[in-house]
Amino acid sequence: MRIALFATCIGDTMFPDVPKATAVLLTRLGHEVVFPPGQTCCGQMHVNTGYQPDALPLVRNYAEEFGDASIDAVVVPSGSCVGSVRHQHEIVASRYGNAALCEQVETVKAKTYELSELLVDVLGVTDVGAYFPHRVTYHPTCHSLRMLGVGEKPLRLLRAVREIDLVELPEADACCGFGGTFAIKNAETSTAMLADKIRTIGDTGAEFCAASDSSCLFHIGGGMSRLRMGTRTVHLAEILASVESNVEVTA
Image 1 (tube, rainbow, N blue to C red):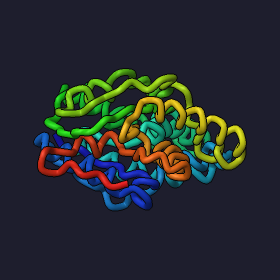
Image 2 (cartoon, rainbow, N blue to C red):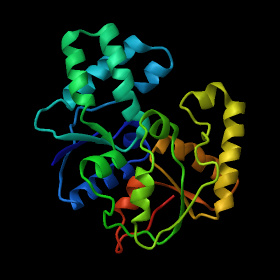
Image 3 (spheres, one colour):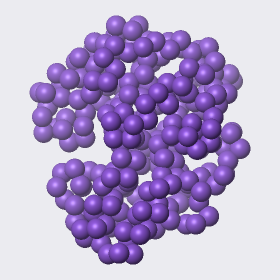
C-alpha cells in the first residue's frame, strides 16, 4: 500500500521523532511511505479560535497535497488533526470554498486515518513486532476517543508489544486539560484537570505514559516534569516502532 504521511505542525516543529517512528513502522510492515513536501497545518487552531476563513488556504492545501490518486491512504499520528480533517474541513470548504474543493475534501478525508485506525481497520494488524520492556500506562486522548471513536484499537496494539507491562490508567477517559488554546484561555481549570490526570498516572507506577497525540503528551509531560515524577511520555508510534535492538526512548 502507498501511504502518505501527514506529520502535523507539532510533529514537524517539536516532536519530529513521532512522524519518523510512524514512517519506520509502516515501512517495516512492507508499505511505501511518501511525504508530500508541500504539507503544512490542518487548520484546526484557526477553526477552534474562530478564524474559519483563514483556515481555507490550509484546507485547500491539505486536499491538494494528499489528493493524489496514487495515494491509497493518509496516516496521521494525531487523533486531534484527523478530527479536524474529517469534521472541520468540510465545514470550512462549504462555507468559504466552492463545489470543487468540497469534492476534494470528501475524497481525501475518506482515506485519512489516525495511526491505530490504519493499522487495525485498514491493514488488519495488531501485532507489529514491537518490543518495549517497560511499565506503560495509556491515556486515550479526547479527540481520538470521542470524535474518532478509536476505542480499544491503541490498547490492542499495545497489548501485543513484547515484554511491555501495560497497566490500566484509572479514570482514563478524563481529559488531561490541554485542549489547545483552552489551556491558555482557561489556565486554572486546565491546571486542575492536569493535576487529576497526573495523580492517576502516578498511581499506576508507570515508567511511561503513552498517548496518540503529541499535544496532550506535551501538556502531561510538562506537568510531570515540574513535579519531578520520573515518569516520561511516549507516543504510541514510538512504542510500536521499537524493536529489540532499539528500545531506548528519550524524554
